[in-house]
Amino acid sequence: KDHPWSAALVDVINTFYGRPDIPIGAVRNGVTPSEGKFLGLAVEKKGKSWRYAHDLESGRQAPDATTLLRQTLASAPDHSTVLVQVGFSTNLARLLASKPDDISPLSGRDLIRKKVRFLSAMAGSFAPVPGRVRHREYNVVQDLDAARAVLTSWPTPLIASGYEIGIRVRFPHESIEKDFAYTADHPVAECYRRYCEPEHDRPCWDLTSVLVAVYPDRGYFTLSPPGRIHVAEDGYVFFEEDPKGNCRYLRMSAIQQARVREALVQLASQPPGTKAEGAR
Image 1 (cartoon, rainbow, N blue to C red):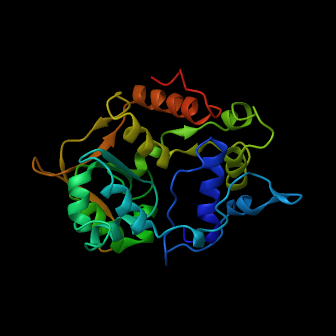
Image 2 (cartoon, one colour):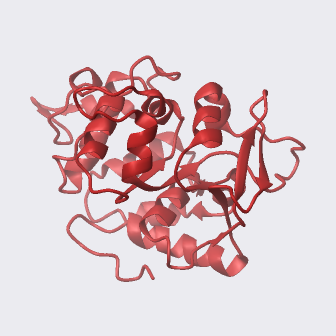
């Protein structure tokens, strides 16, 4: 999100979980500059101090996201990096289009091909959505040109988590109220409450993409046959099976659905410095 407090809130959450030095990049001239419902949490104070500790006060202090992506990939071992995209495709489309520079003699496309193992992206829909004949997924239509560039021409394996996956995995509001209550002030729980209505079980669109990126071999999901993703002029996404294609999308049985929900609750609710023993 192209708002100065967006990067600051990321730093709030990283710092809360004991990882204050994770590099943070900020999009420039993004498609959604609005503040939203919870970004203000990053600038709230108790007395003269931040309510939640962090040192990045504004996205204007952060490096450009494309520059940071190029730096990160250039310094990584070959074929070692898994990228996760859970919002708009703006930054990765710009990475794809980036030219050789003093960071790397490789173009963005060649840098991705050399360094990235696979991309996990929350985008599109690959199964019928009840009540919608032609569902156009939000992340795609908000920056349509960027989404088309990434989804149709990404040079490494790409795993897409469609709308139909996240809508079936709902994070229980009871977990927010009970499992995050180990501290009076919890930035994740507070953001959830500010965004959602009381007792709302939020669909886990983004978290499913993260889960398959971190644990791709745990059987949480089944992958479709290989193929290619196409993006129509109106933003409708469809999949064409092709043995030579680099794309797959997630499928999920009822048993997998229950496992995914439990894993996400266990992983997301762990206090800083602990390990989710229940995630299998």
